[in-house]
Length: 167
Image 1 (tube, one colour):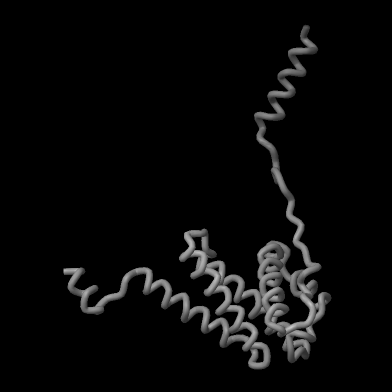
Image 2: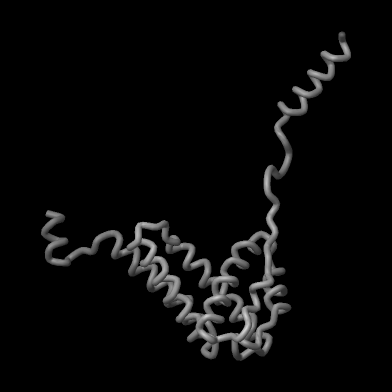
């Protein structure tokens, strides 16, 4: 029975449904960007989707739809902040503006920095900005273990030390 509905296009494949929903979410994010900055964001979104489709076609690991949405969220939030501060073009945004934007939330700095790197690299390639302002940004992340260590580690070393003094 499901074959009948698929054959007559009465229901969509799950992949089509997900893609359509993701496209509408992307469009809402783009429409939330102030008008003077919107064309560059739309071109960036199209480039992200094209990159994703190319990766799928080549059998590579494409970005998840959620990753594309997170990148667009970052650029949308920056655009709203920038227009609130009087910027009317992407070229007028400085590295200081980007640093102030990234300073809002420490926990999301790495993700936001990645999104800004991608956006400004794309904007530079397409001529929307003459200089990639995000190229000098970084988001140092602590590598290795964070937080308290296992209680077994400290008791094992104290046990070994206790055995050495008992001899």
